[in-house]
Length: 202
Image (cartoon, rainbow, N blue to C red; front, side, top):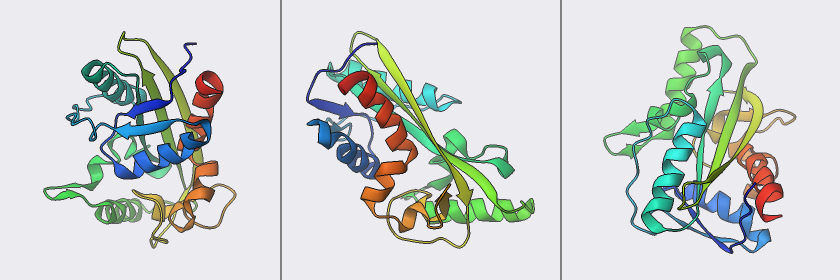
């Protein structure tokens, strides 16, 4: 296991919400972050069919382009009644000609569940795979999962993405109703980052 001993990480994302979550999770360790957008990096094509494949594409592209260690996150929601969809295509379901519309994506998700008359509870899980890549091609992989269920209607205006329809196990409120501190203690990303901390920066 290669250790990361630096104080700054390039986070290979253009998603401001993900960057802010990662910054909050790593701040207690004295690590600051910058984004791929901050370095004017293009978004590479995510051609993988699994979270780890897409995370590797993004992390290695950023590390090669900048010569810096780069951390990438590929995450999404898997819904059992939809055969695990949208999965790695979570963000794609929100794509429009004018950018991403996650309200539209959540409505699409709900409509599909209604079409198949999915029983309740509609079990699901948020998945997060982190890849930390170095310019020499080495990488380390960390995965976190938060099981729960999807609900309707949307609830809450916190977080981002599909947070307003996801209730994590053990709770009766959605990620969209949680404050950032509470979500960051239990989320799929927090679980993956905890593994990263223990293996590399702890």
